[in-house]
Length: 112
Length: 115
Image (cartoon, rainbow over all chains, first blue to last red; front, side, top):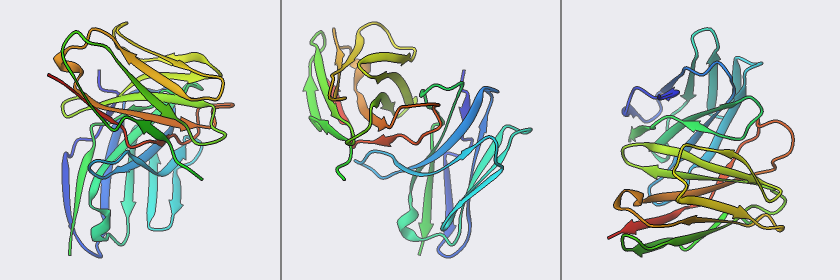
């Protein structure tokens, strides 16, 4: 039972354009969501999070949008840079526990 | 501030052996979680420790176990290794108090290969 789904295994965008990564979840108990970026041979790096009491959170070039009714969240990167090329994981947790459930990731490639 | 440190970075074992992986969390962090990453399954939660107690557990067999020490350092043990245990094992730490709405910070992982 995959509670967090990232339906696009890969995404390719041009430098300077917007990257939009999507994530869907099924567990209604999830109330906290995070995005991580992962380079090969390194651990995931925390990017941005959002609590279910919000529908948007922004940090520099990164914005996460949460649509609770659709159980959908997205990460927008504007403008995209070649250094953003990595695998992006979406994760969710809820019910006051620390168990993070992740999607399988989306490989973002930003072309110069 | 030092990040999460995992040792060793690489490990090769044979089937039937057992292995212990180590994780030192960020100073001040009291929660340590372990995840397994494989190409087919992505990142899967193993367990989480807080104040030396296992607080959350994923759906892995009893061959996977862990513990946490009073200084918040954690170890994970896998007994009777199987070929399918080959994976990247990641440790993550967070402050741990209150609700679970805190980011977890990951180490670079231990790459375990079973021959």
